Length: 443
Ligand SMILES: Cc1ncc(COP(=O)(O)O)c(C=O)c1O
Image 1 (cartoon, rainbow, N blue to C red):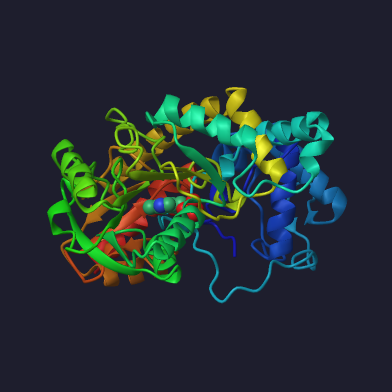
Image 2: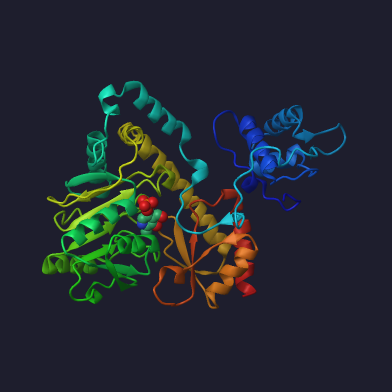
């Protein structure tokens, strides 16, 4: 329910088509329909809401006037504008949830959904529908559309220093890794070394594909290659930005990893999940670029655009055939056009600046906290003195969702939180950090 402490920037999602006053009217209408703004609640004076949202007062008065005309708000000269009785809950309700979504979501995983490039993406889709030859609307190629395969191969060479290989279009990193794990099982490899801590979803995907996973510790040089158990011939690793610790695989460990792969005649599964976002250090090229015969490289738009698109790729060593689930051809071609036009690079450049600024604000707002893994990506680690599970619980009670580093480990370790800021509203950074600090001091 909205009240005097309401963070309007968080409650009202000003995105979508049309000018700002239409976006605001739509967001208010939605908040009233969903019950986020209840019957009888006062909406803020136009001057204050304009200041909160960083728009002009005219935008707010236009939006209010529209909603008064539609019967969602009631306003009389000289008195506050309120949500009209019976207006809330009259529209289609969002599906019932067991727990409401947190106001401040700092769980890692999502990019900035508010800033999804709606217009460029819509242009790219329109372009595909207008100009794609009718022959492309037939049965899709199982390895992905040849145009996107070529475009992604070029992009990865240019941006990630990848070597040429067999480019496969798939539904994301998880889908690609699952396909490669199935292929490994068919070739008789049943064990996969994984980083500990690591991305739990990929560990589960490998198990689902029939592999047994062997957790290998990570330290401040990345995966401790020397501890990959004997007999294991495949390893899943995040060399450019270890998830979730944020370390870069050191040059020494890279060399060890490659030597290991040659020694055991093995395969490195390189998860290059958020390589585009580097702030205080130079990007590191892929391992695949130096040993394309020994590495399967994976990436997706899940961290750059949105996981909802389900668009990813793998670059496989020669002779590997992998079955995956490429997304709809129109989406594949839209991505191809977006990359070729330079729109993807432009979007990433602006996203990088936004994330960097948000990270700086979050770091400043967290005060003297012990942080690590801040140089890159969309998350960082916050080290704790007390029990992380208690802080997670207290933060959740204050409407802040954060993740316990232990959730990504196979056994409990030093207490820390993983804080994702990719999808945190800029207007909520300081408030979320203040609530989190309170949860830490009362823990
Ligand atoms: C470590 C890691 N790998 C991969 C992914 C992306 O997976 P997918 O492309 O299947 O969405 C993520 C996304 O959050 C991630 O954190």
